[in-house]
Structures are given as C-alpha cells and as structure tokens.
Amino acid sequence: MKNVIVISTSLRQGSNSDMLAEKFAQGAIAAGNNVEKISLSGKNIQFCKGCLACQKLGHCVIKDDVNDIMAKVLKADVICWATPVYYYEMSGQMKTLIDRMNAMYGLDYRFRDVYLLTTAAEGDEQTPKRAETGLTGWIDCYPESRLAGTLFCGGVNAPGEIEGNPKLQEAFELGKRIG
Image (cartoon, rainbow, N blue to C red):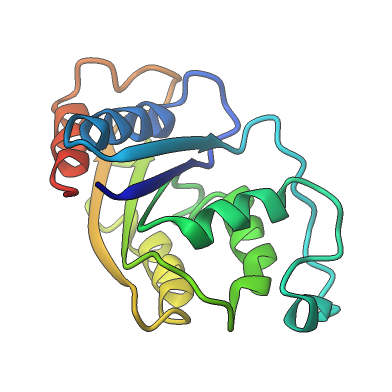
C-alpha cells in the first residue's frame, strides 16, 4: 500500500481536470492505496516572495495553506498533479504552488512516482507538452523521483464536458496501476 496525494489545481467547480483527478484517485483506492485528494479551490496560496528563508527553516514564512500541503507531499509515495492547460501551460495556481514548495528542496521526501493529468479545449496532443516540461523541471530537483505517467484529454472546455469520455476510464486505470 502506498500513500498517494492527488493535487487538483483547477479552481473551477466541476472542472474536467478535477474529474480526471477523481477517477485517478478512485483507481488508486481500488488498488488498495491510501489516497488523499487535495483541491486548490478555496485554498489560500500566496506568491513566493523569493526571500529564501525556507531554505534555512524547512518551511515557508508565509502563513497560508502551502505548508500543510507541502508536509503531505513530503510524506507521499506518489504525487498526481491534475491541471487544466491554459495558453499551452499548467495553470497559474499549479505553478504558484510549485514555486512555494521551494522549502522542500534539500528535505527528505518519499515520493518516487509523479503523474500528470491535463485537460484543454485544444485537442492536439502537443497541447500539454509545456505543462509537462514545467512539471519535469520540478521533478528534476528530486533525483529519486520520475515522471511515471501522463494523461491528456483534449477537446473539453465547459465544466463537466468530459463526462462519458473514455479518458476518465484511462485515468482510473492509471491510478489502479499504482501498487
């Protein structure tokens, strides 16, 4: 049994990327894993100030929701990020969280496998590549970890438009492979 954290970065209720995240989480649970899904919707996540105090303290000096999220990420065996693709890149709130987790650099971490789930109105398979590149920049800072899998569902825009799409089952199966 692995500890899995699924981070849904969309702030939109009923979002397509959140629905992928939910299916991934359900698959990971079906495989017998301990899963926690964290939605950034409603979270207070401020911008990094670049003070680098986190490098000395091991946590950020800003008092918001990031330190709690970061503590869970450090203890997880598997991290799954789910994001809508905006202008061919990860959502701003995902990038802000990644930047704020700078305090993790140099700390002990357990995660080895990282997954990325993306959705976009565009259907071209090249659409999520920059988001993937951005995430692998973060992963590269944790040499024991790797990008273990990605899933993209294009052609979905309005909330819930992904309903009935076979990519939901693919997300479930991707989560189910964690064991």
